[in-house]
Length: 209
Image (cartoon, rainbow, N blue to C red; front, side):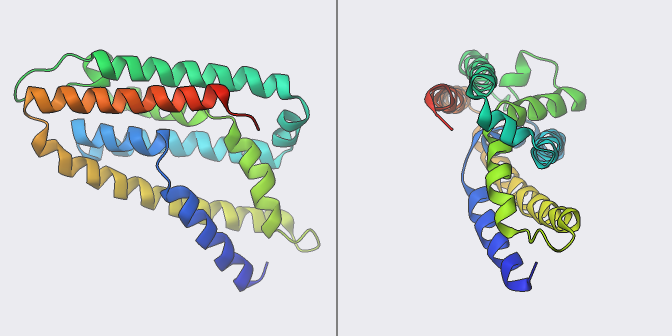
């Protein structure tokens, strides 16, 4: 892999990671409710799932999903249902004046493990990550020059960029927390984030690889 190829991968990954999606929305909403430190657990969960999915894709499962659309469809529908479930939780979350923490975790226990698990499940809800890795990463790997080492470099680069954007969204969410002490604002925030999660679920339910 040449330096030019790596920079091209860096630039493309930077743009892809910056694009708002379920992971970024979850990190931002968690930070808005519980602070950046709590959001770190959610980030770790999201990143754990992504790394596992990328590794599995490198082992050829991404190609397997592409070859057997029925398997992909099952995973896609299950993921869409989970995102819709989170959206409903957000939408219906109880609020009270001066309590910005009302949200998803007002219904579920919001321990660090719960936040980690939620992040991992949201990231794992999108099987297209494996297809993305199977199609995207090989474009930057030279098969005649230690492909595993190159994949490790690309994966490390992806991780640094993705986590950096997590923190951008987390700090943005934390800035919102001062406004969420009013019950009316918190209710609107819950319904907006819940609606976006449901929207992501709808898109995932109809998307095709």
